[in-house]
Length: 243
Length: 298
Image (cartoon, rainbow over all chains, first blue to last red; front, side, top):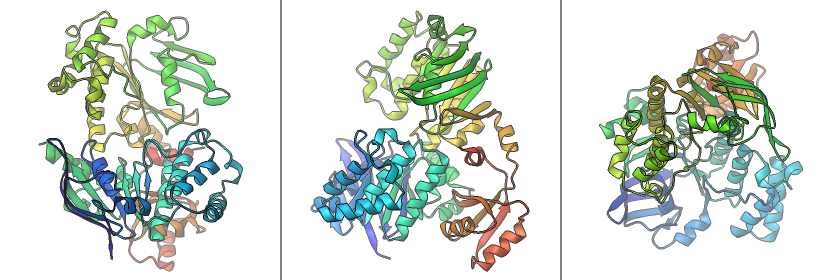
């Protein structure tokens, strides 16, 4: 399988602080890749580099065929990004948000019109299309944010804690949308603090203190650490590091 | 310790909590477990006398939340969901400030916060706004405890916190409870329910169930199966579209399956084999609080 992300010896320093310390990993096309780690482990820095928002101090990274040093604008056009804190405009309606983001992603008028109708029909949003975002439940908002982040058919989408605080049923619906999107060939790069969600990923990478501590499929890691689930893998890695 | 009867609250016609009642006993570690928007913060703000209920009655240690709010404020410690310390004051100044407004001193109840404070001490002169997430949380806890409250109220202290730090925070809460303080906590993480003495499962402004975690699990009376396969997403879809299915959902590396009445493991095995699923493991399992929640969500 082809690599959609290829990272080699990537380091990022802020002054004397090393946020990312010599990271090397690949993400394959169509993969659901989980990016895990404690708060402050360096996940956000790495994601910002991969999205073309921040330049590394040293090392190489190629995303969707584009170099993070010289082709960051190309990267931005070829990825989707859903942030945890802000994803949609609260005071705009569902339809307005769809149209706004489609315009930002550079779709033309005709494409926007067709795609908007398609999305509203596919997800049964006709009755609520004129509802302001602030009035819809969080779970709905997050699903919609994901659909908007993938509206322009990016080859890879970055999701930063997309399900934080979402109810158990909607969390699962969200993951089913992730699966079906991945099946269509879009690569998913996701962070989460829910360890059951880590088990939904094809492969996960666990970071601690700026370094990659483990990488592999959940089953491989569970075997390797001789435990029964990802929660215990995570705990063992973080514990060993502190000890 | 806390008694709430038929409490309701709406914001501009939007119902936040709908006629709920509960009581919390002295020295309990009591959890409100529910997703975002279920009404947890509204309940906590009413208990903390920061918000008036539209209807119903709430008493905290015999004091009424409307009439006796000043008395209640002296005996509670409240840690809101968002960081609410003064960002431009140092760690030490924040703690001293909260001690002073409660007419006490840093030293008087130091023993209560000693363990948490020792982790903060290296940063005691740093402005609170410049602390890491984990350290901010520890500072907020120190400030909520420094006047030795009888009741500690924590609104989603572990949201957005990684799995290990979450676990460590709960160990801390259990220690605080052992020192005689009643602890009331809310969380969207279902797995944290089992760490409470009693929990209220809450959704859309209603309480689904209040009980000790073991009893909630025991009241789940459907047979529950776990299936592990090479492609859980596909197997889940197969089961969902089958005649056997009452409910099926992904659950980490497993699929959880509740079959219709009278369907046993042999019938499930045959179905999967006939559908071409070759490698799978089927086992009957005990439910978790999350299974209960999914089953009883409205």
